[in-house]
Amino acid sequence: MDRGLYIAASGMLAEQLRQDLLANDLANVNTPGYKADRASQASFGDVLLENSATGSVVGPMSMGTQIASVVTDTQQAALQQTDEPMDVAIEGDAYLEVQTPAGVRYSRGGRLLVDPQGHLATTAGYPLLDAAGNPITVGKETGVEIATDGTVSVDGKAAGKLALVALTGVAKQGDSVLTGTPSTPTGAVAVRQGMLEASGVDAGRVMVDMLISMRSFEASQRVLHAIDDSLGRAVNAAGSVTGG
Image (tube, one colour):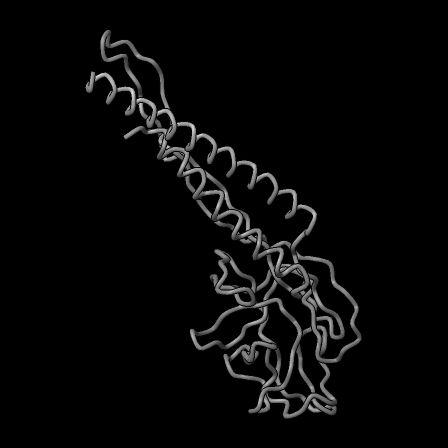
């Protein structure tokens, strides 16, 4: 089988995955605290071609391409004023700790609510945790105040303090939560009540990247069709010679 078919097909598969990531980013262009993904490609490796008749080296040829890694862009997006008391944004390199069915995860999505158990939680229903790993109970949404250091008060009485951690090795688990290795933040960190961090998606950049990816996919598709047509003509020609 012609190696070119596999090379073209691998390029199409890589661009298909890239388009899936870009489409997901575009769908979350208005999701507070969302972090965009970046995909990088790498070659499978090269094969050294030689002339079978003379043994002379023709040169290397790629074996195809693949998505080598998907990296989440954790750069802080702009903070937007909402004046909603249940909205919070984190200024600085830190994340909120939340309890999910899969364990402790991390988020910068600061649109909050009070769950049926009276815990301060994300809109996905994940309770926010304090430094001891316990949910913060507020009981109601009115009278909730969150200080810049993360201290939560209800009607002037302290209810707990948000756990704020730095992360390394960040990876997504869904659109709203992240995994990683937590540590104590080293820089200045402040919690801003009545604000939200915008989505980290640049819609203009995503649209340009999607067009580039689609053109690359189409180019690989044309190469695959061209090779397939050439093989088909070769088979037909061989059959005609044999039949004659």
